[in-house]
Amino acid sequence: MTDAAISAGSNHDVRVEARNLVLSFGETPALRGASFAARRGEIVAMMGPSGSGKSTLLHCLAGILVPDLGETYFDGRRVDTMPETERSQLRRDRFGFVFQFGQLVPELTAEENVALPLLLRGTRRDEALREARSWFERLDLQGMEHHRSGEMSGGQSQRVALARSLVAQPAVLFADEPTGSLDSLNGERVMDLLTTSARAQGSTLIIVTHEPRVAAYADREVIVRDGLVTSPELALR
Amino acid sequence: MSVPLALLGLLDREPSHGYDLKRDYDTYLSPGRPLPFGQVYATLTRLARDGKALVGEAEPGAGPERKRYFITEMGREEVEAWLAEPVPAEPHLQTDLFVKVALSLMLGRHAEKYLDVQRAAHLDRMRELTHLKQQGNLVEGLLADHGLFHLEADLRWIDLTTARLDALAGEVRP
Image (cartoon, rainbow over all chains, first blue to last red; front, side, top):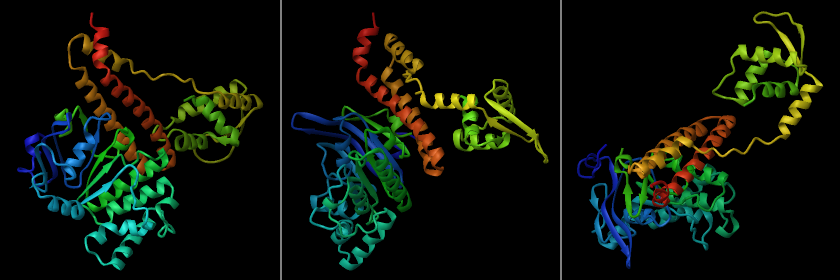
């Protein structure tokens, strides 16, 4: 498939897209014309060496960073030119995030952490907590509902973080090295849960990883190198 | 995989018929690559000839010849020795892969592009194995894992080589 065929203007299947992104941090260029697109329900791995720009590209797609040049889209809507309040709302209502170290709110219990995206969207507390609790059995975390992050292992915390990212059924789930801090067995478990749940919900999942075993859970991979998505014929096949 | 030693190992559990040995070999030791019946019986005959197994009397019953095989002390010692010995730690250097990279550089071709295509091929295979692991039982999953870790090692080599292409070009170009 060609770049044109998958572009947001011509294909309603495209969920998120970046066109020719350029972004520098001070004098250091991070993105030098990167283009990328992912379809609805697609799972794509972004690979590349450290410092290649893959996390920066993910953050631009997620509306966390604004590129110096180029355009980003979600469902055909331009994201990079949105006011910050609108981008913030988009992140809250349509996107989910998983990072390397769970990043749970330490003051909250596990179930409150999972319920957080629903609470931020205005769901009633009892309803949000009920929905949150329904995830614990699925993630083999029964009995951990009232634990705080300091009382859980790395693998358990990351599964709570997964539930938090999935609970509001995001249109796009952004995962930045989601297994980076875990051993092989826990990493595998997290990837199984992440990809199975994303597929069941129809969420587009974009995973930044340098681990081939993680990338192998995706439908396809793109390679980011020196601020560019290389081999577009491979990247958009 | 040494078929004679694997069958001898299965016989070390308990005396068995050839059919049972084949079934357990196919199920637990080599899913997806079944052992032909002919090879099972030829191997058992050789093991008996070499004094590592004994053949029991033919038993009544329909179907193929039903003889039970027993392991001997010599066979048991061989299985013990085999299990205690590590598999040679051979580097799985992909000679073709390296030659293609070096030649591409010598000829001024796009070695990086070639490595990208190879990476994609490796990841395609890893995707198949990951799928198999998710769908299959524990035995199939562990065999898939073995393949996944080896392919991952190749990919690390591909990444490292990609990062060192300029230096390698300096070495291989006269």
